[in-house]
Image (tube, rainbow, N blue to C red; front, side, top):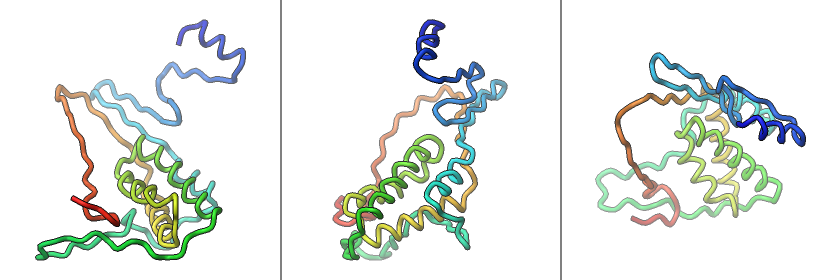
Length: 177
């Protein structure tokens, strides 16, 4: 950041500068120049989020972030789950689900992409949430509270990777091939 730009910002805002490159928009960045790696984490993000939502850790560890859809082995056709017919939630519970989704979407995109599929499924139902949606959110929260803080590592490579994935077939209501 140029000195004049930083000075201008300091006139109107309280800012901090980190010339080590170890902090950026809530991320903790650990540079390993010898091994050509960078480790990105968000220490205590989950515990702070659980405190924000006034939730305590689960009694037993949850090992799945979202309910599993059992495949029907040997069947010629795999059907998607039936539409959710559980009772709708009130506006306060709907806001809670939206807050959880938004809070953990940032964490998932930054350091723990394993949560993205679950968050996508929850987000798809958050406009008209039901008791079943809340059950899925509670399972998700129990899962993230049961895990260690995520750390994602990037390593220098000569490889050029290009990928696109949208592999959510048969795990959502009204899904199609």
